[in-house]
Length: 226
Figure 1 (cartoon, rainbow, N blue to C red):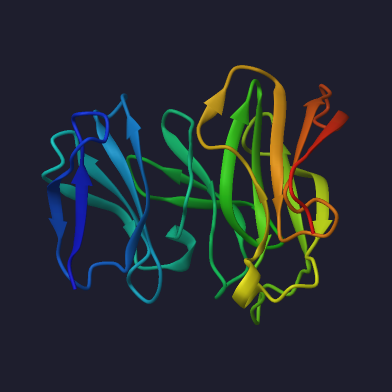
Figure 2: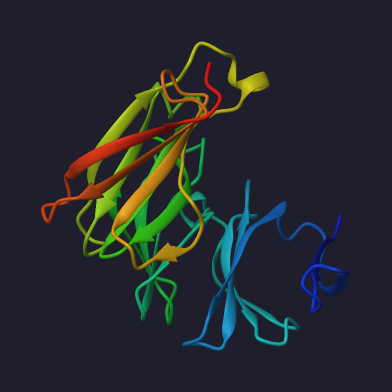
């Protein structure tokens, strides 16, 4: 079955098909991120066999060039743009996950940091880069805690916060996740929310980071919680 890309030029009032991807190329699109440096969009797709990939979609949305495709290490949901390379956490239940570096020009990848679960969310706050892992049980993802990872340079990462999965079955009540906002902010006040996690489900946590990357202080804004 083909996958269609819809776009709007009237702030969401209407949508038109801008591109139709050939059936069997991938299962679904995880994200599309504009890169002014290459005048195109990074296309992040998944999920199984030869489907995962990172491609460059032309600015007119007509052509796709696959920079890397066909392996779980190319299965990404969010990326950080470091100019000549992309950094991302893998989102896979089939292999151990990691923070990866991918060269834009060659597609060459480097495994920078092993992490303890699949990565769905990522955001930059000021000088700090954050990504989080989710509790997605599988043969390789056995950890029962979601973890927030932080870096100042993209190469060295450290865990700064963890929360355990709550008692509710993920098949009906979501994977346990530390949900980061999308995009990036120049403000170094960081925030994230808890989903299906013990003690912080439905809560927003706010804090700032010390220069060494450790959490300096946290506030807690409570919403609904279990």
